Amino acid sequence: MPVDDDDVLNGICELAHRLWRQSMEDDGWKRGAVYDAEDRTHPHLCSYMELAPPQRRYIREWIEHERVDDQLRQAVDFALRWDEWSAEELRAGMRVRFCNEKDPTADALGRILDWQAPAPEGGGIESFRVQWDDGSVVEYPANARYIVRAEEP
Image 1 (spheres, one colour):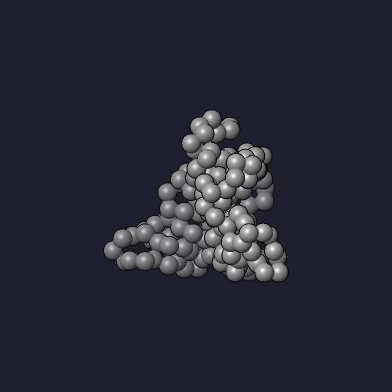
Image 2 (tube, rainbow, N blue to C red):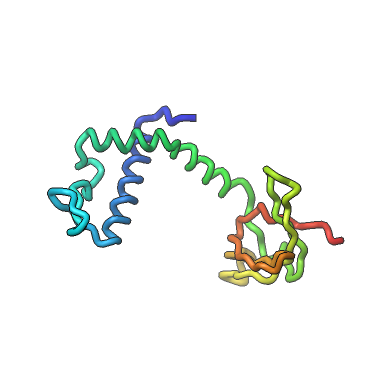
């Protein structure tokens, strides 16, 4: 579903340019009159609104082509679809499985090892670790609801 609000699309473009600019500056690039890879100068290291209309149009076309609006919607949907795991729900050794909606036969089984809680009185957790039956250990964020309780054998 494409964005039908110009203000929203322009905001996405501006944010994308700001992220690109910050990344370039973090890598040592500076604004310069011309692009020079050796001197690390780039004429577009400015605010989004300082870009000439053709550059803003190119960014917009790529944002639309890459369907970034859909990717952002999906990211928010995934983040807010489920509540986070709580310390009350978890116990060390609890059997869990990786719930793969696209391929339910590929579900992996494992056990909760431990979790990180920022404040004991809050009941929330920051992350938890699972040891999978293949021996691998992976840390997941508290909102990883694709890890579900498995039936004990």
